[in-house]
Length: 228
Image (tube, rainbow, N blue to C red; front, side, top):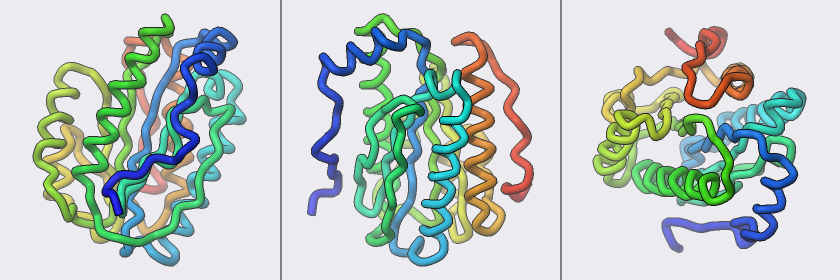
């Protein structure tokens, strides 16, 4: 099996995409969720992760401005799979993830970085302004592949303000490696409080979507789900 699979309905055709932008010329706030679904996530962890994704979907859809401006992509790994390409929140439908496989974090992040770059080019091609993209990693393990090059790309991208990278560790995550991946201090999920985590994420992205592209936004304190 290939270490990267992409669903056959992805990506949206160029002419359809152009029509979407004509119908909604608002600036876009792209976020890609890079989700660990390796074998160690089997059982309650993957069930709670899927429930959190559904809550996230409901929350961003219920905010009319965020629904127009936030674009979501989901990339899961174990193996690496593009489950949802970038789509507006109002059209976003969360997948049902199943656990299995190893933890190719490095490969997943490389693909996520490439997807972000491609999406930014799409915005530019269609004359759409955009906010600083977010890459949001959630993992409960240690990478089973090389991750150092991805770390270099992340740090360079942060330096150039090309995107913002956030790392969330579930119980069992290797925080030493997460600290080498992220310029921000990784946060540890308190138990399996994925619902509270995704509620915070939806509120944070909604706050960004109400701002002007290029401005700094104060995010809500990650209380109720993170061990700080």
